[in-house]
Amino acid sequence: MKNLILSHSFIRQNRIPMLLSLFMLSVSCFMLLSVSAQYRYVSYVRSVLERPAFSDTVYAALPTVDPARAETVGDAELIAEQNRRLSEIREMPAVAAVYSYRTYMTDLRIGEYYAQLYAYDAEMLRNFRLNVREGRWLSASAEIPEAVVFGDAEGTVRVGEPLTLADGLTVRVVGRVEQDLIPDLRGIAGRSGEDYFRKSERSGFILSAEALPKPFPLSERLRTMYGFFLKFSEQADSTERRAVLHDLRETGIETVSVDTLAAGCGSALREWMKVSLPLPLFLLSVATVSYLSISVVVVNRSRRDTARLLLIGCTRRHAAAVVTATLVFLFVLPILLNLLLAFGFPAFLREGTIWSLERAILDARSLMPLLLYALVLETVLVLLPLLLYKNRTPLDFYRRTLS
Image 1: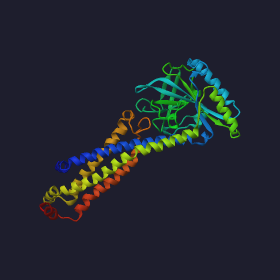
Image 2: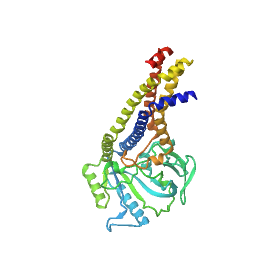
Image 3: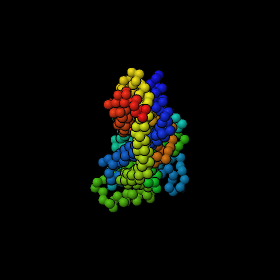
Image 4: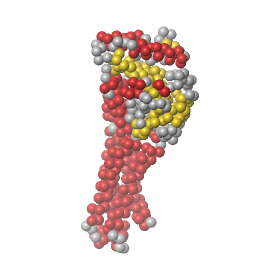
């Protein structure tokens, strides 16, 4: 109890600067978590687009309107037309491969929204493989329909358990993707590169298109969409490639080069980092200097109480430990606050802030650099009292207090 009283006394003497430093450190740590996680996400998406499988490749989304009538059509008619068009694209002489997918809405609610469903064909499944942090990626030869989950679904979906996504579709969840928010893959013509692959706002599942029952009951909540990557043949010259792209445009299919998408992600990331990184780094620097300065002040102002401790029989080690514990406790508070936010309220933290391209991400793994910084600063805070008390006797402290 007396140690707590002493610590409270040390804090009370410096409460205003300590509160300011605590606030700056908490805000800067929170912002750096978001910046670090955003950088990790966009860099990860860019690394996927830079895989060899996506060289000489364009991305497109099949239209959800009839180009001739310029009006939406029914899902059954739309899917039949999209399947026919995709078969024609695969038969073009300059086309080496097509990686396609379709998006659906499921009947399963995760949080406030119905979960999404991404059905990948075999080529898409192999070439657009995402890293998993729990379980494994999908197997193209699985006998039982498999799915991997993404998004904020920790409390709803467990890896290894069966789950019914829609009428006639029960899957076994075999993995959880590394990034909680995956590329949305619902880009449309006219968007810049980074917007094509913005973060999906809803949780959902990825599975093999072969696992879908036929016919698959369509949801009436949102229209399905077909997207694909078109890889050109190495033997195709520029004239043949332009002819393919022209044919696609004539039927209302706009394309964008995957190289352009990757470059757009990189340039957007650089510009965003220039805007977002200076402020949290400045606040962190100011907070660090403030903490070190306040620590020196706390140590000096604690001499009177420390002198009394030493004169009544406490050791120098005990006195130094009380002051050190006070300083470390004050510094650990913002770290604990950010840990609590990152692990306990992920959905709240992704509701959107000014520190991201679209929505904020806070990845718990981004805490590692922050914890290393905390370890270094705490080491300094521990050394300060020890250096002060190392060569000073109780009489020295008492004389300094009286002077």
